[in-house]
Length: 153
Image (cartoon, rainbow, N blue to C red; front, side):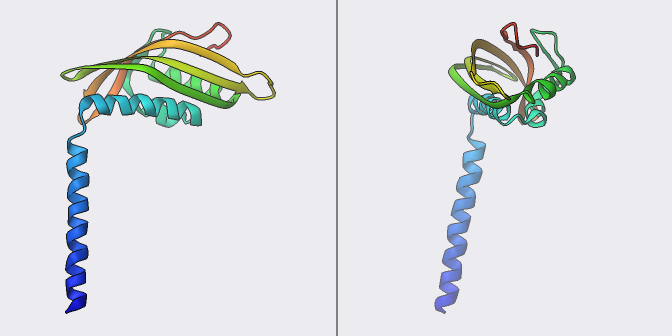
C-alpha cells in the first residue's frame, strides 16, 4: 500500500512539473523569442557553428553587404576558421514586435584572436535585424551592420 501511495505521489509531481513546463513554453512572448534568437546568433559565432547560425536566417535573407544566406554561410565558414577564439556580447538590445515582423537593434561588441596572432582584435558595431515569423519560429530576413576594413565577410 505504501509503495502504491509513493507511486501516485511521484506521478502527481511529474504531472505538475510537465504542466508547468508546457505553460511556461506557451507563455513565452514573441519579444522573448526574438531576444533568444539574438543571443543564439552570438553564441553560434563564438562556437564558430556556421550551420546553426544560418538556420536562424530565412531562405530569402539578405544583408547590408549584399550577402544571401548561402553566400554568408560560405564567407563565415572561410573567415571564422582563421580565428582561434571569438567573443560576442550583445548590449543595448531593443526589440519591437509588430504582428509577424520584429526588429532587433543592438550594439555588438566583439573580440577575436587570430591563429598565431598575439594581439586580439576588438570591434563594435550597431546591428539591426529584421525578423519574420514563419510558423512558430522567428527567422532573420534582413541584417544591417558594418565590419572594419580588414575583415572581409
